[in-house]
Length: 304
Ligand SMILES: Cc1cc2nc3c(=O)[nH]c(=O)nc-3n(C[C@H](O)[C@H](O)[C@H](O)COP(=O)(O)OP(=O)(O)OC[C@H]3O[C@@H](n4cnc5c(N)ncnc54)[C@H](O)[C@@H]3O)c2cc1C
Image (cartoon, rainbow, N blue to C red; front, side, top):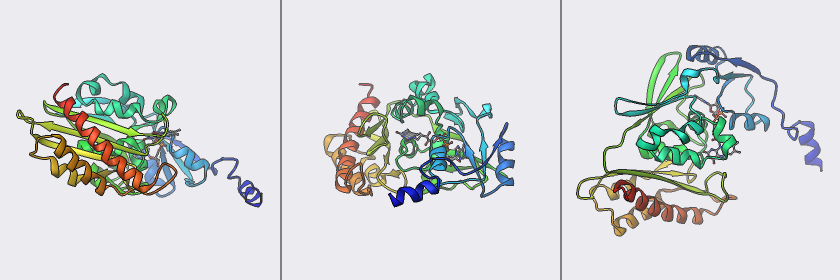
């Protein structure tokens, strides 16, 4: 009762954010100007599905919110120079329903489909999810498996960073306070490639207990030429299971090698016990889901 009264006094139970000023950016330079003017005090608002809950809980209280929803030029999914390019305001629903992605990188629409529910997918954005850097976010593992590159714009101009270098720690990335993630670049996959994202969740729409992304390419003799394996919710960032990947390169993807890779991935995972399961359970689920993901990715590569 005492705690309730204290929280109530602090208005935390009311779920009302602290006062802030909303700034509406109409272009990328506009957004950068606002961020630069109020560096350290401003936050970008995209879909708001992660930022607004944090503000309501007063875990984050920016003095300025830079709304980028008017920057139409940041919403796109297109193919260019052997890459798929996804703009920094592209919503989950656009990824989920993109015919180009269904044809060229089906792992992405499949992943978007298991994010939250339709309300979340209608507003939430890929770049917002990546910038938020929740290790339970579903795209992180896929970005690592696909060896994505992120384009970032700030006061000093444009730079690019690999997904493998982007995630630093829990909710922390290499983005500076005055930078905008403007584009995600994904290499197109050669023939005989297949990918899949598998998510274990308590119920539909929940965050992952464990998620596994696998993307691989086979040669004409069905030997594994390249493979990327990303893990969701089993570390302070999305994880790339590099030892598991190494164990598969140059090998036939038979049950034995898939088992070796799954065992390695489960040792690379670093989960913590929480409401969704114990450390041991999650590690075991990594083993099971990596096995399933590799088997499915292989059959996708073979067009079965
Ligand atoms: C009920 C519910 C269920 C959910 N379920 C899932 C789920 O199953 N799986 C999952 O992965 N996610 C889930 N989410 C999170 C959801 O996917 C969010 O949409 C996403 O994490 C954040 O995207 P956003 O566009 O809403 O970003 P916002 O909330 O607007 O912003 C998030 C953070 O990113 C920053 N930011 C936003 N855009 C950019 C940019 N272009 N450049 C730099 N920084 C930027 C913001 O300043 C903020 O710090 C869920 C959310 C809710 C509310």
